[in-house]
Image (cartoon, rainbow, N blue to C red; front, side, top):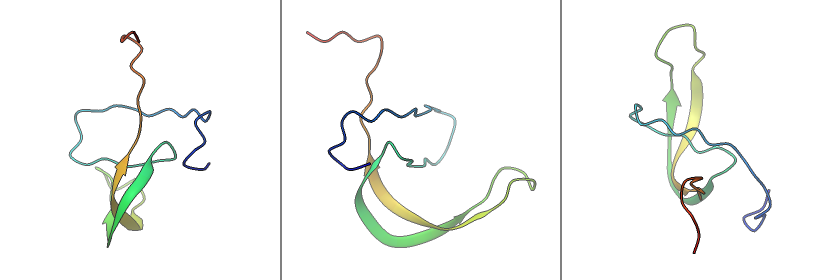
Length: 69
């Protein structure tokens, strides 16, 4: 995927109950802070992910209920 690949389609799950977010393939990194973190799940059965970059990212979202003029 390139930043100008406007034909690519991805699924992004919207969840308002989280205190952090992740940026997957549908996101573009705008600014890398140069910092990393280790991410753990809410129970011990989830494997920890290490050295995750912290960044400012963006994505586009087409809301199915909104009509274009």
